[in-house]
Image (cartoon, rainbow over all chains, first blue to last red; front, side, top):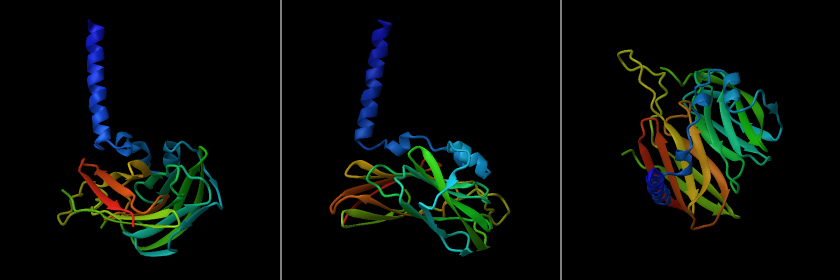
Length: 152
Length: 102
């Protein structure tokens, strides 16, 4: 009896979730959890740890394109591209209050490339991390900021 | 409901170049209002892009992404692909917009 009720409840839930996902109400990204620990990391080490690495090796196969000097720290264009097969890409700003700016998940068929715009509170090293074959590698670039873009 | 995204997607040699501009203040939680009170953090934290119903890009943002977030990425696809872009912010607000690859 109890078994039956549980089964019925389970069937009902899976039917509802099935409908929601076919209707596009739950997408894969939204079903996944936002990586709170990584985004709350206050230092490079904390974010590296939350991403499952200790200290990624530098790699010339990761190219980080960004201005040497950003006049406005509120809008700093950064572009990351790699010749490696990337599964994940992350952008870290060492001296920002929250070090991890963004991370991207790259399915098969999507190129190891992303461009976005980030905020920088002050001049800092910016890290572009690429996860390939379960391993993180990175490129680093210093960006000087004339006018900070986090507070104000 | 927030303002619509601007989505541009063009195909060349089998690669679709997607540019997305979202409309969002992306409050970092570091800013103060005129009376000196901290403005609470409020930002888009997740984004999903599907082409023909299949994931082509997922992003997680922190407060360090600029106001009115911009994204550019590329995937293997074709003219006529139907793109669906979804975002959700830290207050649970959502926005979905569609575009067709040209």
